[in-house]
Length: 247
Image (cartoon, one colour):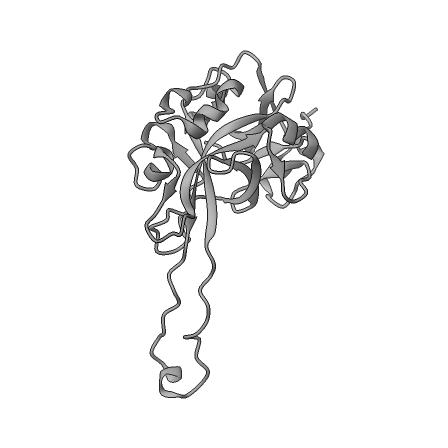
């Protein structure tokens, strides 16, 4: 699976690499975690980075529990949570042209995997040998919570203030990272890996009618992995030392 990743290039370098622009400043990140708003490039707006929340909430969900940080490549075209986003950007009747779901690129330049050790789980940082950025295949969706309902109680009988007129929470746009079988390197640490896209085929992931052939294990020849500090286990820690190899 992919549960934490890094993106510590400067904003200008990222914009040049992905031919897209940030609408708000971006700072290098060393511990990108579920629940955070992170940059992606959506199929419906490929020239702009958007910040979406990591942990997909299916648009049909009653609440925001059970967020999905990963989607298996083998079932993205059939599972209800992912099918519409995978098939193409979706505009629903009555949405006034607002795109509700689709594919996206999730920029990164490394990710973490954990391995069982005698004294607990040991994190490893995995990246290309030159730390170059890459895009992981992603899916996103727009979720709108149900309107607040009135509960019968003292308020219903005039015994206190009512919350019945409270405005419901606004829509949330969330994403998930697609995973596939591991390559030879990642297979030493985990049975799944993020679906890394070949640079020349990233736009194909965004636009192809059937992009299933892209969701293959990326060759491991130019990749490396080494153990790093367990400080990465704490999502609130985000500093360059997290990717330093252990002595």
